[in-house]
Amino acid sequence: MEKKWVRIIVFELLAVTSLAACFSPDKSNTVGALQRYYSKNLSGHVVYVENVGTAPVDENDVGLTANADYGVVSANVLRRSIYINAIGCQKSIDRFPDGAPIHLARYLYQCEIKLPIIPIASGQQIPQAVHLMMQYWDGDSKTWDANKNTLEASIYWNLNPWLSNCGEVYIYTTGLQLFDTGYKLSPDTDWHSFKLIADFEKKEYISITIGKTDIDLSGKALCQVQHNDWSSELSFSLTTESMNCYPSSNEIFWWDTYFRELSFFEIGN
Image (cartoon, rainbow, N blue to C red; front, side):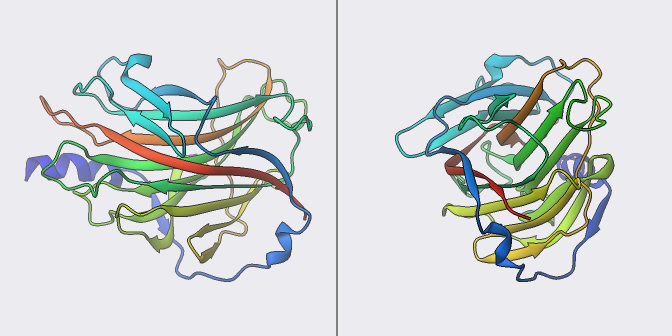
């Protein structure tokens, strides 16, 4: 009972609201889309470690492997009693990979995700969540009055098998709160398509699509996170993120997530 409670409190401390219904959005918002980036297997991406626990961690605790047809982002490579987010990342500075200047616009980010196994509470390969994110950073307020804040559009797929809402899909919004999209994708080992559309000029979400299901997020505010110690650069990052489950004392959990077919577009209004 104590073990289950430890994992539940991590999630329930976050403020969560619910979106009741799915919809079919206006498909014209992808007309004239300009592809700014594509990656089949995360080749050339880097991986960062984000410590969400209390034990010391470093870059050796995470990994990223580019296989022929897909990439793998690994949390807790050294199999220690830690709680971390392994952040796979493609980061552009000043210009996107196609040469276009980074600017506030509507963007679409999509990729396919696969789990190596179905997580079960009795195992050691146990995830907390899988994330996808588009992050806009303007450290010198060149394009908007950022005041050292990011603009972030992100998906959080909860995969913790101890939680009753395992499989439910959320987004991060104002104040780093998790907002319930109303969609549940129960863990399996199939490839699943995720698509995220956001308006960075209006600082709002537009929609997400999981498989063939479109979910309206119109008007939901993008997440903003302040980083007073970050640089003055102008950058845009696409992330593929994997988090292992929260361990209690002397427990060790790790997690790998597979990603493929990343596409990033600027889309019309």
